[in-house]
Image 1 (cartoon, rainbow, N blue to C red):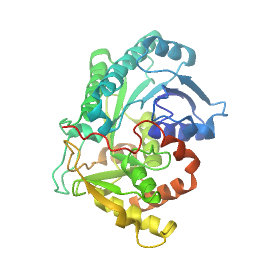
Image 2 (image 1 turned 180 degrees about the vertical axis):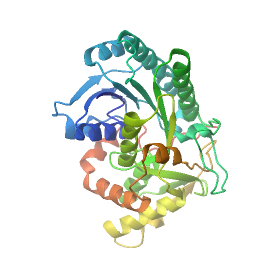
Image 3 (image 1 turned 120 degrees about the vertical axis):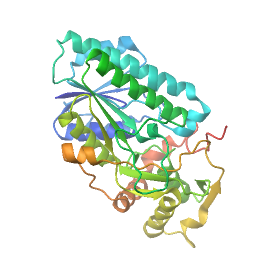
Image 4 (image 1 turned 135 degrees about the vertical axis):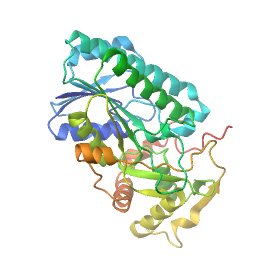
Length: 349
């Protein structure tokens, strides 16, 4: 099976690329190499005969048509997206262009290719999305997002992803394109671009800077280790039913404040300060506009239908993540110089 992976130089996409190649699958990595992409993320597979790279933007339909013709994929795994909520508040236009119009272009290129090939039954268009399309949950621990939860996006980012989900479903219903959709909870782990909460906290802690926590830190997220997510995505693309959607979660709910304190405690052990705790650097800052209170995933469908469950607890995953960042300064240090990385964004109402 040959996979065409969009966004394969990004955080989640590169994890998919690495795992797929390690399992003997051919992969074509299509990436525009925007600010959050890094080809070092796939350095371990670049010499493999199973790996190919195409520098292209999913907004370029002609480039996509040529890539489909050149590589003849069996599966599209669509991960290319603008994904940082704070950046979407400051500049929503990039999110509309990439996440909506880019997905439209990719769907049309995939449909034309699928028709030209005689509509093979094994072909799949797997769209990777987020739990943020469902909006916000109450604090009741019994309340979780299911595949049937109505969409209620609250940010330009989540609205753009909800739009792309709807496009993918429409191309299945209207044209019969065999699609799969997955909606995941918050990812973390190695190669996490240093603008998201967990790497920001780790790197600011090491630099002796304030650790920003939005509001009172009570917002709750379900955390999913990125290698577990990649395994789930490859499971879905292999065994999922066309037209079906699957939620993927880590079953690891934590408030943002609990998460930051856990990271500080791990750093206190692995790289102690001369005095005090890294938790002394925690600073509460003005909340993000429209900040959803809680996300939590019900991943029972993927468990019961496909036999997938997460293998990494939040404690294990955070320890591995902290150690990876301690060991890989040569990877993250240059990325901190990219525009806006590590800065407070998204403060406009």
